[in-house]
Image (cartoon, rainbow, N blue to C red):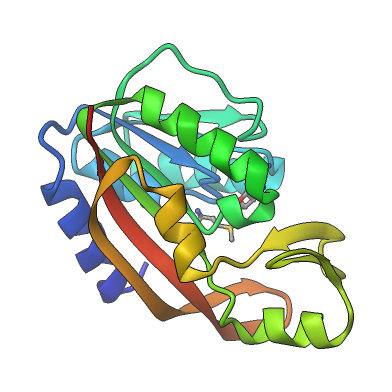
Length: 202
Ligand SMILES: C[S@@+](CC[C@H](N)C(=O)[O-])C[C@H]1O[C@@H](n2cnc3c(N)ncnc32)[C@H](O)[C@@H]1O
């Protein structure tokens, strides 16, 4: 995780009233989960990619980090009786269709404590890849394409859609920015994303 990402996470953590329970939806190999555990959170780390979760388990062992519970589940199927002080979904929710994303947001709101913090990073429809896919005729719904890379839909948000998505939260930060990504076989590249930090209001 680079310094910019650490600074952002420090800010998110500092926005949390309590630092007890966190949920990382679509944790991947768990860089954010490990960071939060090292800040004292008990973290539930959810992903459906077994290989990524094996990577996370290995990193937990190597770094001797405690407090991370690794959960192999589809985000849409995940349920919890817990209340979380912080819920993050970093570059994971855009892999759902818009109605499913809205449903997940409603569940996230229920899982958060009052004043709990939400951090989302989701693709923007300014992204070059989206524009390319649209030109290739891959649009499946407004702001949505079927990705030939993963053979699944990806939703690229407009500013209005993001505001609508978090309309029941108090928005602390909403920014459209270019983020570096290196998770694909074709190597390092940038994505236009929205970053949202928001607080649950009752
Ligand atoms: C781009 S990676 C981001 C990983 C991590 N949050 C990060 O920022 O480094 C997206 C992650 O979302 C996970 N994901 C996508 N769709 C999912 C689903 N329906 N249920 C659970 N995890 C999912 C993928 O397996 C992948 O690990």
